[in-house]
Each structure stands twice: as C-alpha cells, then as structure tokens.
Image 1 (cartoon, rainbow, N blue to C red):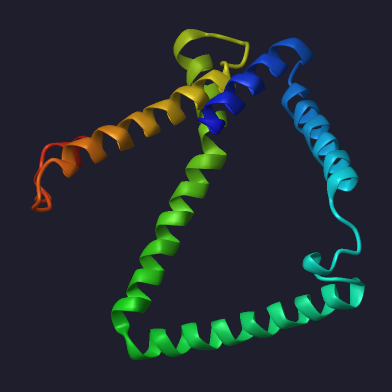
Image 2: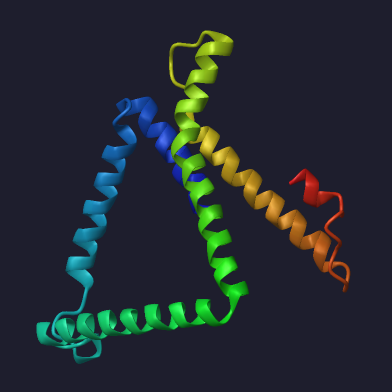
Length: 163
C-alpha cells in the first residue's frame, strides 16, 4: 500500500514540478524525517547505547559478526551443495529483478514513442502504482486460493503458468 501511494505521489509531483518533482519531493521528505528524528530522538539515554564509544563498540561488534557470518556461509556452501545452488539461483533472480527495475522506464518510453508516436513520457508513477496494486492483488488471490486446501498445489496448477 505504501508503494502504491508513493507511485501516485511521484506522478503528482512529476506533473506539477516537472521531471525533477519526485526527487524534490523525496528530498523534502528526507529533510522532514531528519528534522523530526533529530528533535525527538533521545540523547544520552542509557537505553539507546550511551555515548559515542558505545556506538563505535557496536560497529566493531557488527563487523566482527559479519565476518563470522561470511565464514559460516562459506562453510555451509562447501558442506551442502544444495545451499550453494540456492544462493546462485537467488543471485540470478535478484539480477533479473534489478535489470527489470532499471530498464522498465526506458523500454516503456521507447515503446510509447515507437507505437503511438507520443513524445511526452508516460505516467511512470501511475504505472508503478498499478504494477504494485496488481502484485498485491495477485499475492492476495494466491494466498486465498492456496489456503483453501491442505495439500500443496502441483506445479501444473493453472495460476502458476499464468503468473
């Protein structure tokens, strides 16, 4: 729901402020959030970690635990080939998602120009909002349909190829 509202807000700001409108809106929201956080965040409170030395100690612990986590990941991948395969498949999936994320706007612009001869950019914010609404609706329908039976559906179940 937040992404749908964000798309509509981005489209509105692009229509009123031009192509830089969504970025200006984002900047104003970031500045507003920073001011609110700086005014309301408790300072020097023991429950928040104390002084700056506590913060640097926390960062050092986090980096140490990240190194341990990386060592554990390598050990897991070397022991279990299925886990390594899962990591590779996930990386490939994420790569495709990022390519789609960065390429959908230029592709849509070029297609609109080629097919309809439209020189103005399409309403990206509304299109993004519709994509997010369809994603949410598809997830909801899938959850409703799959929760009605106790056995998992087969891979040939009709909604799988459609999705």
